[in-house]
Length: 325
Figure (tube, rainbow, N blue to C red):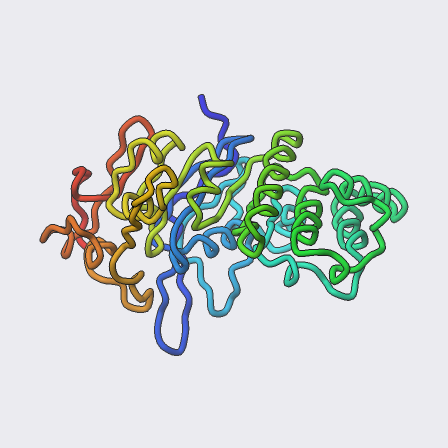
């Protein structure tokens, strides 16, 4: 029997704007086991960050509205908790690493103080104890503890990202959500940060959701993969299932965008067209305007999920029944 830490069921999130209603997340379902890493993959605008903000209780309202769904963490539905209870969970049992550390860190507070604040708030430590623990966390992310009193501008981009990781891990959370944590880093530093995150995740036995558009990152750190498109998870399975037997035309298109370094004449085949406008999603399957295997039913009917041995795909090519859009 699986040891499920997080389960999301039928999550639907919209944003009310002057232009109209943006359908950001449309019926997302997935589960994450303790100690495992899930890669949430897709283009910008797929709904990955909104899904993460829903888990954290940080969907801006207005304009964001969680219309329906459940987000069950360790047996509690987070969507039903009052804000005072979410504050006890946020930064303590669930932490988030954002993609730009300069906007995550307060420029007028030392990095050590920003780490120790969470320890004082959530673990009832004295300021002296929190300072000592914060210095230890800096050491764990390969930054000398003596730099506790330095400010974010005194660190490089890679070191600032390590500080954010130290902040996220300070209270030993059960779940970390990493929102494209290596996007702003060069390739060498990206590899170092990913290795650091992987080793610390194992040391602290923490589950993780890795939000990214980079399949290379997914292959490095994830156990399972969920591919998002236009607010839906169109394919989900283990790393081996997705990398070895991708089924959805969108997932296959993402893989065709990766150059083959073993082939001198390797050609990249980009997916034609653009992500649909969330203010006006197409009828039927949202991917059908870009799909090379589009059928007439795809233009009219939203496919139901078809699942085999934990590998789930949302596509008419693989059956799964029909539901009118």
